[in-house]
Length: 123
Image (cartoon, rainbow, N blue to C red):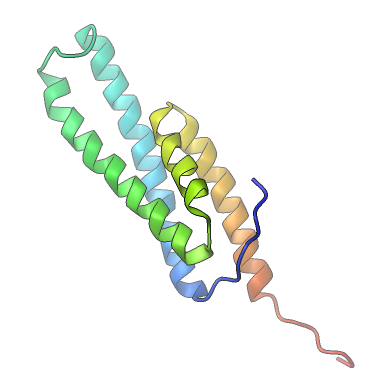
């Protein structure tokens, strides 16, 4: 995605938000696999049992994932459509892991580029 990146105002807060995003992306990806496993074992939707217990837990984890994306997105200056697109990655198995790696690489590069000392002429 190529979009105009704004400078990060608070690098320390952005790093903390990135750490939370990493944890939530991995957790949401794993929770999605558990949910799919339970659904397959139950033989489909609407069977109750473990699915009735895990579904709300998975929903809470996904909500935390969405909040972590919004938190990171506002701190690094993403557009709303970009945040929504990343949030939607939580609907597809394996995709949260792929998106997490890509986002972390990109945001760390953005932070490092902004944190790099600027060489003054004559130094």
